[in-house]
Length: 117
Length: 114
Image (cartoon, rainbow over the protein chains, first blue to last red):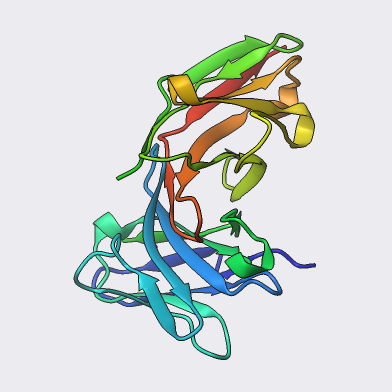
């Protein structure tokens, strides 16, 4: 069973460009979470999605950031007009449906390291 | 809102020595508790989890953790550390009864000397 997949692993963007980060959850997992890790810091929650629904976006910046998890295909975290402060590692995690007996444990992908020049 | 404190930013132990990493949480009910490990440039790997029941939980790689409700703690332990255990360790808390976001501590960086 393949783990959580993220691509690209490394992404370089100039200020003002758009960054699109992709996440494919583990097979059978219907919950996707995005976290951001700044250098020398822990992970900060950004958004929690289920298929075609945003469940909790309390950690998302109000502007320039958006996320989706369509019926088909990977989850996408989109950052418009990137600035240097967006440079960070972005991690995606997935978890099984709670009703299936999954109890909140999340499995993480390898991350996308975004560098804004 | 829940919060997690890892008071030790950096710990150094000798290979073969015992290890204890501290984690304190703040949450109104019994939380879901997790320990993750992150090697440099890598993602997070789940070491162990506590949901309910036995307060001493066993994880992978010889790690264990003990939930102490009275102290709001979930400390990670290993009786004998190996050089390959050098990494960053994160404690996290989630809400009970539902899938939800995890709140992470700031991490403890473990260095192992030979």
